[in-house]
Image (tube, rainbow, N blue to C red; front, side, top):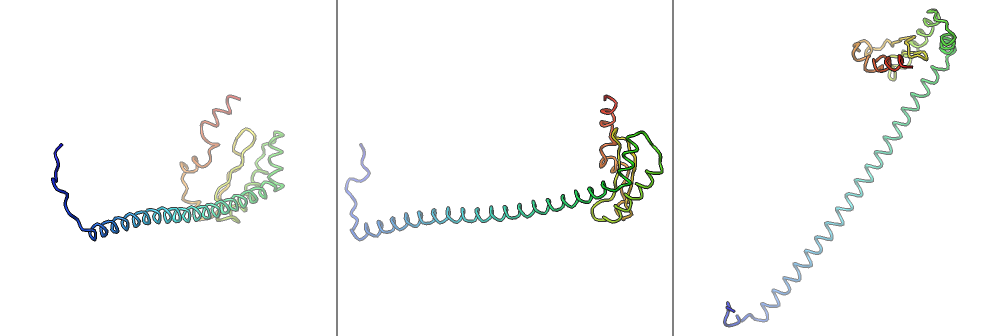
Length: 167
């Protein structure tokens, strides 16, 4: 075995103590830095999570209120006597257009009254045949193309008509 030092180097006790104190100080600073870093990382993450949970609850509440508003508006429209009378007469086989015109006027009044919520409305019978098509008078209803409306009103698509023919 080859020895690098044939003689042990002499290091004074003072130097040894300085190195030992520095080594202990560096180790304790390293431990303190790791513990502090982990603690504050967890604290920041927990804060972010709680903020995200709060935002999610607020958005959920907002969405629930919007959907409730839509539900009650549509419910009020569906309770109109002229609309119910038209659907009942269509189910009985009466396909006159006079009742449909009355319902179209009622639906247009509904759409005009709810300018921010609804722009178009369509009424279908039990066979998914279009009875009434109504649009509001707001400015954004004028810009809708037929292609956009076909995508919005999915009951007009070919896959629905194919299902009807197989019944």
